[in-house]
Image (cartoon, rainbow, N blue to C red; front, side, top):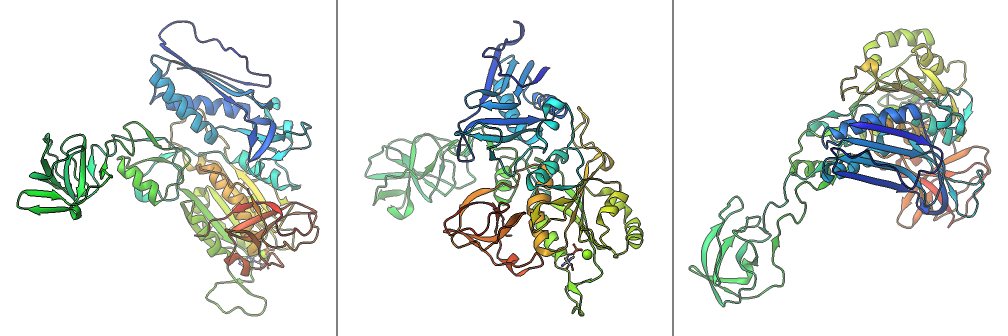
Length: 576
Ligand code: AMP
Ligand code: MG
């Protein structure tokens, strides 16, 4: 397939010329237009940003991959970046194919995958009142790299520059997103799927149900048969398939789920029937037909699951029903988690004065369960040289890890060696402090290739060719909790697919008692039907509120107390 891709700053022309006449019988054009609403707010424009080289490579890879299923002849993709006013085209896709079916199918798959796989971001939305560049609606936390045009499409750079000073919450998220790139998908059997993200569109293999089926144990007869009595001419169990026509006055005994022998039947429940020998009389007529019609739930070829869904029991039941036993999913991640701190003792020990029970290991282990990871956990001695030897003894675990997490030692105390340790392991530190409370001393580093060569066959990357990321997490439990949900979760999603953690709007049901603080705060809260109840916490060492926290309220820097009824952004948290 011929592929043409352009990233442009100017408006996309009203007319884009199709390929010269030839083998194609269909030329399908699609335009994605900027809508007047974003995240529930009226907007006047959206700003898009991209990594041109990566975007080009990904778009080519996607089109080639999808066209192996839906062969097309040529594709022309134009994506606009920069500020795009409402009503104007953000993306144009033109597809040439022999017939329309392939072009339509390819377009649907391509647009689904574009959002997941291609590094083109909505950077911000400009509100309707003010088009100034300063006043914007943040698309938190799905944000773009910091520094705006410094790393935007214009510059042609493909990387978020390493930043070692304090970064803002948005900058930290953008840094993580820009470095963590989707890993190749793999095919997995059901048992390995829970928690993994679907990376293909699943279509129904046949009509579902495959024919009209009874929803009751009862008797089937023609839909408008007004007869007083009926002759029972056959009995059908759920596994039977005995096609035959029914005449007026004839009926067949059917079990729940049985395939009906012909079209246009109704079923009367056996409770509403009186049977004598092979004769039945209807005691009560119902308006319901008690029939599940052919294709009522799904039609053959219809898309029933989209890429990006995290697979749970229900989705797997659907996959089983359509016979997809080895879906294409995100890879299972290998995570290595080290705890540090000589004061930390196992939870089954009684701590001496000055010691503290390890709560972070179980916290991280359980939080990772949602993402389907292999987790290896170990303690590191609080001495750089001893820690290095301990790591050398686990070299293969580290080499195989996609994600390395180190709890504690992320700050600048005498014994805080997480940063030098990560550097010693070959990680490039992207940032080491976030202007956030709790969770400021957060380190994020990357190691290895941050991109996959074009045309790399799916699943063929060796561990050494994978990008690996590391986080140095501040040791306090509340900081751990916040940093995991905001940052580690974002990295895991970027690596394996799925929806990034997204802030929602909510209302406080009680006062949020905070003094003005120069740092943005993520405040633990309980989300209830009535709204958000802020929970009490005094220090990032607090653990009591964690048991109840199912939301983190974003309190912008220097906000002060917030009154009941105040509208806030919050990050919902699933408590497993
Ligand atoms: P650090 O980040 O190493 O300076 O640790 C900050 C605080 O978190 C200290 O009070 C540590 O004792 C505590 N802490 C560190 N690791 C853990 C852990 N695994 N479980 C519970 N608390 C911890
Ligand atoms: Mg420590």
